[in-house]
Length: 444
Image (tube, rainbow, N blue to C red; front, top):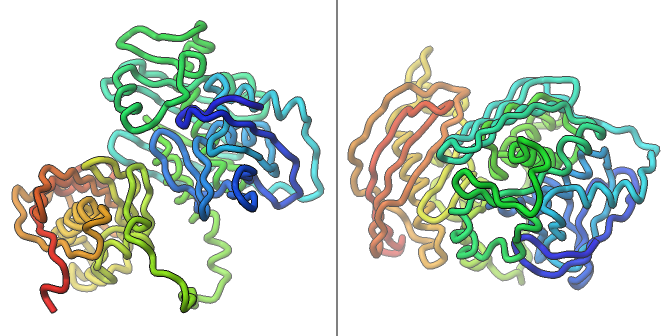
């Protein structure tokens, strides 16, 4: 298949190749030296702004969700995707062209047994207006609600996913965006290959398209197409009932990580509880550059990366992961467990997370916003003041604290931010914080 990438606008040739059992789905960049491969796994997700990007070493593949949805929907476990550019051809904005490629080649049963992952206990994730919940189910079932920030074009659809229902009800749903988003996307270097031939544009109550809508609820069906593709990064077929309200690639992938933790739990329980040895550094290996440590918009930041930005360590690192960052806004999570040391005394028999630690979580998230710039890496963010602090509800062991922070002022080394902590969408605390960046050398 040949065409252009939706965001890059580059010409690209792509081919689907068979692969042996246990290979999974892999993307191979034949235009790069050594033809590096990137496994379609959650640990290789690099960015989730407007699409899902995989990266490994110097190789990167953008907008993989539609291709992965085709493989997942039609039951393909093992395949190699060869490309001579960094993004698959977008086709008409749906997964129809990929489906036809797979069907024209045909499917070959392989000797190894399929091992679907069956959700054993419910998982819930809430970030802003987005809610993702998964319940145990014997097949993959998805119920989704889609709408914009103003509640326009609200649609709902439920489907049990099989190769037949995926091909008939999901594969033809095209990507879409709202007219007012186009200027921002262009300024961010995206949709260079976008057109009415490969996307549906919504302007107020008018739908701009080169053909009639393929389904009366085409928008929510495309959201389901994306969910199926993003969750195939688990590396196994999924069986569970997913309830999604206003999903995004970031929350799809975060839900996948939480499901992945549940999937690995039996295996982890069988292993000895011995912490892994840190990887040995090559004496001649150059230290990581500040540019490589800087956090880019749309990036999900894991704990290991956070600890290269923030100086905090156990038991005072109050952020487990950054799941959304862009411009002056950041969303982070803190999984509150019964093992937190402060619960020994706050309070015995009635554990409640201290409000000042929620305030510290807001401050640390705000610090990441300032420290994510290459020129600020290595500095310390010192608290100067906290105003309009309110604690509204208690936070208990087992809660997931979602920390949303917006940088309202940044002048020189002084920053000011407004933060909100939520649990299950309920605001549990909020504050406005001011902090100052200083080099640690000043205090030595």
